[in-house]
Amino acid sequence: MSEKYLIIGATGSIGSSLAELLKKSGNDIHLVGRNHDEVKKLSDQLDCSFTVTDVLESGFVDKVKNDVNEIKGI
Image (cartoon, rainbow, N blue to C red; front, side, top):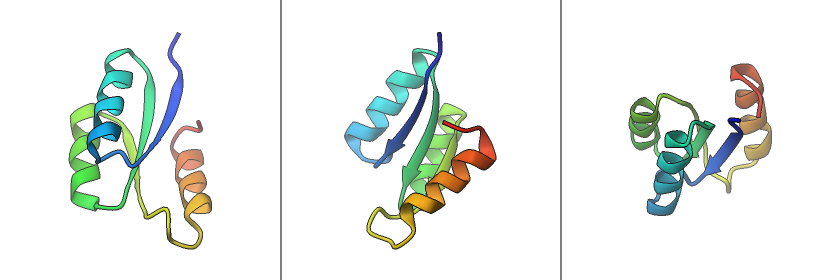
């Protein structure tokens, strides 16, 4: 059974490795990162959705929540 995962810090070495592992295991993932080019590239490679934002920004939680709900829900 596939699960849904939200990966914050997806473009770092741990986040990207985790994203690849979860996706290869058949799970649905949503990436969160602050560098648009990097998170978009990883999203394209893994065929998944993403949000570009920084955890230190005001409204971070609401932005991610809105993006996820619009796309597929997690």
